[in-house]
Amino acid sequence: MRRLVSLMFGLVLLLFSSGAALAQCSMCKAVLSSTRDAKFIRGYNIGVLVLLLPPVTIFCSIFIVLRRHRNQADPDQPAEKD
Image (cartoon, rainbow, N blue to C red; front, side):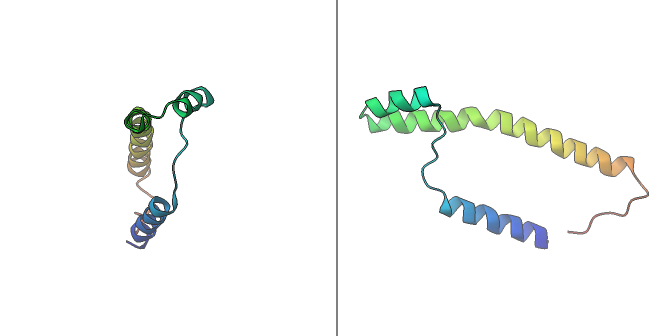
């Protein structure tokens, strides 16, 4: 339980402390800096985040499956307490 509270606190702190994420490559940033259309820039930034979701989801899912498999494979090890 304490680990979960610490994780949630860290995520909230990260959320409020982060500024604008400069997630574009240098070429994309150059194109976006040459335009003044705020809707286009915002849409582009949201598109970058949407394209980031599938790889992160796959990556996290693999580690969740591996962790569950590891816990089932070693029955001699005591269960973890959160």
